[in-house]
Image (tube, rainbow, N blue to C red; front, side, top):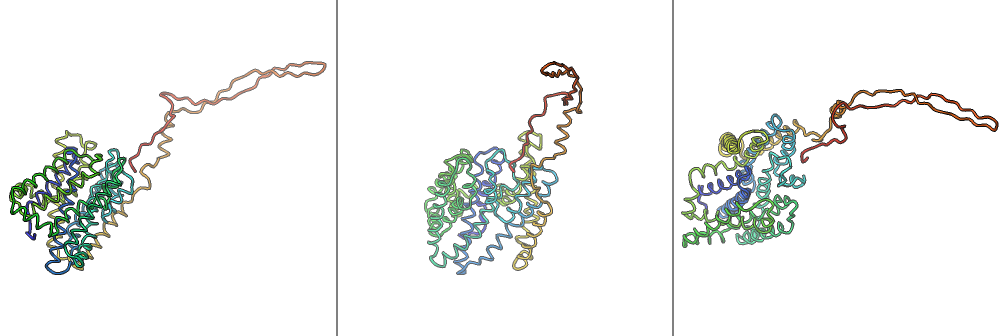
Amino acid sequence: MQRGHIPALDGLRALAVLGVLAFHDDRLPGGFLGVDLFFALSGLLITSLLIGEYERTGSVDLIGFWGRRLRRLLPAVLALLVVTVIVFRLVADTGEWIVARTDAPWAQFYVANWHLIASGNGYWDAFAAPSAFEHLWSLAIEEQFYLVWPVVVWVLLRRGGTRSVAIVAGFGAALSMVAMAIWYSADDPTRVYMGTDTRAFSLLAGALCAVPVIRQRVERFATSRPRGALLVGLGAASTIGVLWVAASGTSGWLFRGGLGAHSIASALLAALVVAGLPAVERLLAVGWLVQIGRLSYSIYLWHWPVFILVSPQHVAVGRTVLTVMRLAITAVLAVASFVVVEQPIRHRAKWAHGGRGRVAFAGTSAIAVAVWLAIPVPTSTNAVDTAALEAVVGARTTSVIATTTAVPTTTATTTQSTSTTTTSTATTTTTTTIVPSGPPVTTLFWYGDSI
């Protein structure tokens, strides 16, 4: 399976990120499933690398693996987090920058998914203040998978070989799908949608297709029966396409098997591409798709903060112009990230490797934390300015006016022999507040964001 770079896989990545872009631009209801296609690809490729290394060397260099993953993923994320928090502090709405600043540290340490679950804000809540880093929940799941799965594979390969990896991957995927179905709540599916345990099946489906016992069968099928394999590939692609059009984040059937079916179709399609099915490769290895696929990680990182700032609430343009603006700005930032940050650190920066790389990792992480400390989060996003409130209410009233009214009173005194009646004048003072215009202020409403 070690074929080197496969352009058609870049084409799959391009389709995945284009689906996500279309979903966030409100043009494809099920485009968010592009994340699952990413998951399936990651599970397949990472497991292939681990098994291939073990077959060549008899071991797996876990430190080296994690170092490569950090060089690939972390620099671009840190750049995104720091730049976005600073820019949002300067130009975004107060609620938007506060949410971004609150979520940034969690995203930095790849636990954004559990932070979003714990915060109680539903992922599909249309009225919640959008988080600039909400989309990083998927990267958190991938990084958590990269942390645990290589250790599991290494242990399984040492004790039981590749077949044990297939058994654990298959059983784990099934258990994860069952957990999603059982724990799904129609009121808020965020827990099962973002939970590492309930989304592991997407990654494990790809991992299963990377195990030699499965991979070799797919390769033999693609070689001996190319037309049949093409039909299977088209069927998998059609399943993915139908789900992207028909699904929504509130579709109960999606969490009771639909996501599982999508992940299986994605893993199977990726396996057929890796197996070298010519017709599928020709369809996916189109030049522009391959270029988008190479930039897919950068595009995915930068698109959502751009979409928040370049939104109908901030930019008064037509929908088509808005889409063009969003895509253009995202493309510029993605290319800049790819050329200036990702590629140099990944391939050319000697300081990013070995012991110096670990020092650099700790240093840059500390710098990011310093930025978070320098831009603190307010204790409350709904604080009341008492002076301003009194000024508003006071502007509706006049001064207190005192009036004096003479009221006659009569006092009668009675004895056994005489009767006396005395009339006197008592003074009563009343205080009146006069409202010059409009109805009186009787109720005050405070409207805040989801925080």
